[in-house]
Amino acid sequence: AARADRQELPPRLLAARAAYVLHGNDTGSLVTAAPRLYPHMWSWDAAFISVGLAHLDIGRAVAELDTLLAAQWRGGMLPHIVFTEGGADDYFPGPQRWGAHELSPDAPQGVRTSGICQPPAHAIAVGRLLEIARRGGALDRATAEDFVRRSWPKLHAWHRWLAEHRDPGGDGLLAVVHGWESGMDNSPRWDSAYAGVHPGADLPPYVRRDLRLVADAGMRPSDEEYDRYLWLVEEMRRVGYDPDRVVATSSFLVGDVFLTAIFAMACDVLAELGQEFGQPAARIAELEGWAARARSAVAATVDPATGLARDRDFRAGTWSGTRTMAGFAPLLCGGLDRTAERALLSTLDGPEWCGNPGMAAGLVPSTSPADEAFRPRQYWRGPQWPVMGWLFGWSFARRGWAERAERHRAEGLRLCSDGAFAEYYHPLTGEPLGSLDQSWTAAVVLDWLC
Ligand code: 2M8
Image 1 (cartoon, rainbow, N blue to C red):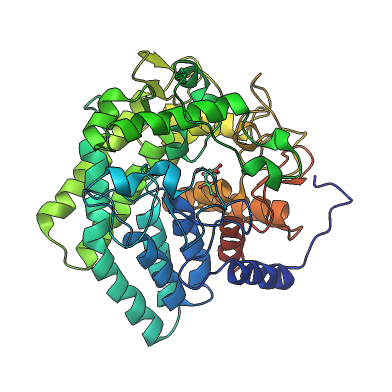
Image 2: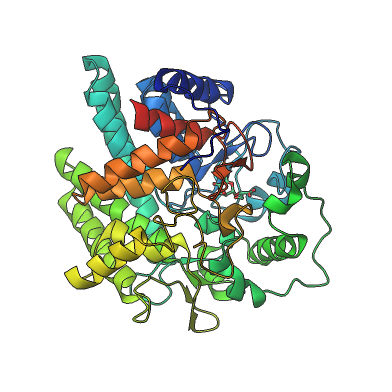
């Protein structure tokens, strides 16, 4: 049960506060991921944020995704950060440190970005945005439908880039070249792969900014982790962000099972939108093929001993063994046989996960409280992330599990009813952690409420 000393805002007030947060973080052309810690646009944040914006103003929601798409790289990659004008020194690593535009001919003109990507949740957001718009008037519908037509080829190119450049095993399991690409930066999923990353003596010096912006530095990754994060950037700089040379040379190359599940779902949504909006049959067939490959690749990672899906370290040739939320990837995208799926669902409901009697709300924690890597206050090592709760709920609804989807919504709202819109929450106490007024948290709360 939620802690007695937590305030609980009534739904209407909570929705008003969520709208106020999105408005407050809006620079005009983009909604920053958070007011101080993340003063720029992040790729997958923008996807979730656009779903929240759709409840307030369809045109503004479309503009958010247009801003991201305008930063698409020549080969199709959507960059993980789009930097706000002028805001070079308020986040580290900023555009200078990435040097993407100086080093790569593929970087977009007129806007500065990082040189890596993030999970492809965008088509999922576009599908949801269209649903929301269709509940509104003719103008909303027309705006959203026009956007689907305009954005479809760009999203297809993004998916093609992933399928062509990030499938080093050739079986559909998509790889990340940096933990930041997974969006779950310091998850124990990556610990063993990061142990193989050895920062060179020539790693240029740097000063972190993030530690000054959270109440407790222990909520953020360690300095040793940051050295490795920056060393990987250095490696990519040295090959000019050429996508294939990056995959060939990066000392971190891990098949990310959660990103792959998101890709499978996003390909399905994009294929469906393509059918509806008369896009070329050959391209729709490509999407269906990528979805099928991704789905079976996700299922193939399952550990026979635990039933959980695993990441694959391509450099070391090993599977990851920790119990993180990524283990449930096959429940999101499907692909398991009935028996395996039932077993995984009961693991999800059991005491090591959502059914843990000590938890304040029954949302999937980033790491199982039963795992030795569990750190309840530290970022992706234990806290619950409302935005991930939304993704689980959305996927479950799509899979036809309405009751489970509704439970995620109710538990997510319970966690967020304090109105802090925290980046993440302590799973045992419900304490808000990380950044407050985090945009994607406000966005998913709005979608849950409206
Ligand atoms: C976090 O990641 C950034 C680096 O990309 C950071 O720690 O500076 C992650 O939670 C990531 O998933 C998220 O997109 C980003 C902005 O919310 O913050």
